[in-house]
Length: 504
Image (cartoon, rainbow, N blue to C red; front, side, top):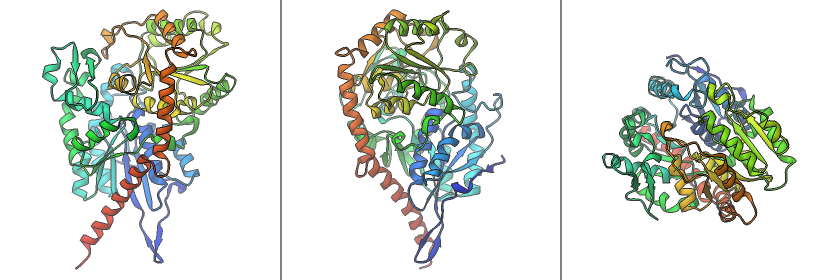
């Protein structure tokens, strides 16, 4: 498979001097999954590596995915932290040109993206052998990079875009898959801390049936356990007992370096490409005119699908709540025909004075950091959880798929920084989902947002966690120390290799 490099002049990291000589930079390749929720934090991590003198990070991406992160890379280069780009063609899996990400593929076609993940193995092998970096940071699904790296004599670091609590829960439940099928509520075994129970309907589908994830789980875990180490976008103070357990059972070494979004150079277009800037600026200007803590931010991530009936109920609930809100919904090009025809007649005019609807990408980190935002209605994707915690914003939770119901357990039951929107029937399976009525949504929102209401305890806890998160990435903080130690260890691998190759 052909590859092509597209390094800008600004993205070339200068070689550094030692005793008057020239020394090659330490080149680290970063290979993210074809999913925005994985790609964005890995880009942030690459930018952090770029801040270290003598380290040259390069992102290995397909063209359409590269377009989404170019604004972040440009900002990082301007800030003196250049990151290179190495492009390879998206595998041919029957998707339209330019559809290379779970966020842009229709739900019914998402299996094609997972097929592309498997087919990327050939390209990864060729790229790594041709360019021979000094280390590779590869997303967890790319299990084959451990063997390729070992063959090349370089370290492979497994990247996790989700925290250690959901990882431990899924690991422990996968071992008992056969017993899960007969239970309505599943108690998670061998987990430190308080007991955690999850209804079977809320578990990730790979724990209940055969799919791409279940078929490759054992290979992914073996590759993780035999690679150099694991780097996770979390911070120790958020899930300390789970971090301790994770280091004991799930990695040779583990580095907790988050929240990486705190170091992002992305601006309002972070993760959304250049075209997202106008919408981002519109959001920030609208928030500037709102009172402090008055706005509910509503966003369900880059991979969400609602029926038109549910979207109409959500609209009715937000209207009836009486609260100002900023709602990011899927733009027409990414939505199904049903999702595109949901808005009640006259609704947008009725809420125009206190509600803003953004179709497509919204600058989530910037919005959550704005003084006007008082709470976050979210699907509980891991990035959203971390970004809300970092901003000190409490969450109303509405998980949809993947590990999101597990993430919710951490922030609602363990951390106490969230509250569920709906206590009725919930499921990861589309055919089992219940349409949450507008009345329930209005009740949850108004009760959570008002002073002295349901959200008061969550607000206090969120602010406490925000202080811990920011301290974690500050100089001397645990995440900063883990990042520095990881880079130090990687640099030492080349020194060690050089010493081994030198004649005695």
